[in-house]
Length: 197
Image 1 (cartoon, rainbow, N blue to C red):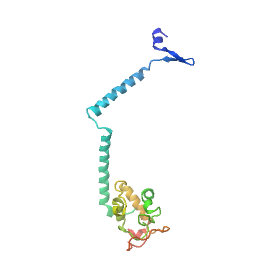
Image 2: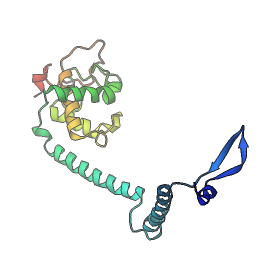
Image 3: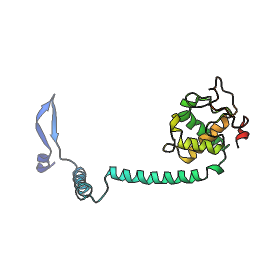
Image 4: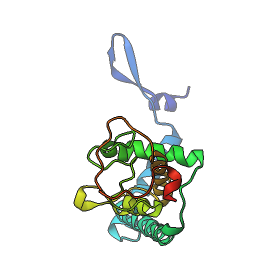
């Protein structure tokens, strides 16, 4: 080892338990990486903060959220325009998704078996807000705020509304234990899924 290199790799004056500490130079790649990060940080600060040439994260997020909301609103408007033409799905994957959504969002008010708690019984013939399938879709989308049912417009996508409504459709005519009494005096139609098509 040359004398010059020995001077660069010096042994520091102190030791601990007989272990001597060397004062090694940092690897050249590490030094270049360090300075590259500093240059990038200065450029980032000038670009985003000083001259405001680019959007900060909060502004970029707000723009993306607005664009997403516009897409969702357009999709929901197209979905609502065709509500009267929709039929309940009988596909198992759709019904499985609907079961999951129902269990998560609907069961706390309507019970897991649809017999009704705070919300009405979904298994009987007495439908307060319309018994047709499209009435159910509309009720899920818009809610019934005066009776405490939330609007799921901002939470569920159109396909999810279709899935949960299709699952609820399968509950009609079932006989849950201790169902909530009927809340309407006029039956919508005879019991059974085929009666509500």
